[in-house]
Image 1 (cartoon, rainbow, N blue to C red):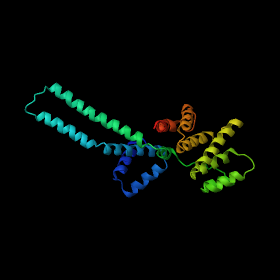
Image 2 (image 1 turned 45 degrees about the horizontal axis):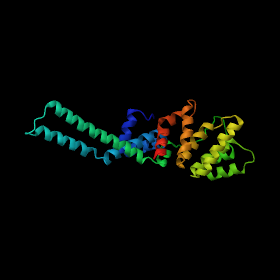
Image 3 (image 1 turned 60 degrees about the vertical axis):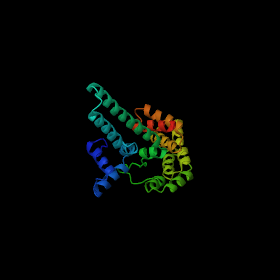
Image 4 (image 1 turned 30 degrees about the vertical axis):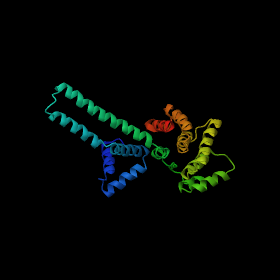
Length: 254
């Protein structure tokens, strides 16, 4: 389902408020697990709710309302309607400004490498080609999520293979072996450059950037994400433009 539809927006809000039935909640949670952009949208709704709670929106609005009513009912001071309007408008504007500033401050300081990684990461899946009945041992191990076996088979191979190199990197990332994942993804990019090929190069660049985010190497991640964003033909260009690059820049500034 398109994560931008009004129906999906309503479901996310209802999930946030706990208004979904058990069946609906399971369905929406499954959609969140399989759609990084949808998960990022839900995280922003959570941040908005937390920001409103944290900065006491209801108390601020109540205080402004009380002030307005007190001045309207005051028998002694006589203020012209124009001055009243200016005063009330200024008070409301100040309250909104404080709320907006608080919201962005909350988002800025609550942003973490793990949140950015989780919102944008989706486990790599091998495509199944029609008519294909056999896979290499390393591909079969990867399909079965035997990630340690994937790494072992790659290390035991006598001939370099870009696809196997990438699968070993993806397996290492699943095992949270960030150092090894970074080595393998960087090797894919280097081997493609040497051979003048593009085998899984887009995937290697994107997953390498996410690995760098998780390692808190934000400078390297920003540089790579900027490269991806500028390449309109890159598989992950739109994904990076959707807010990932800005989030990593914020992490870098913290």
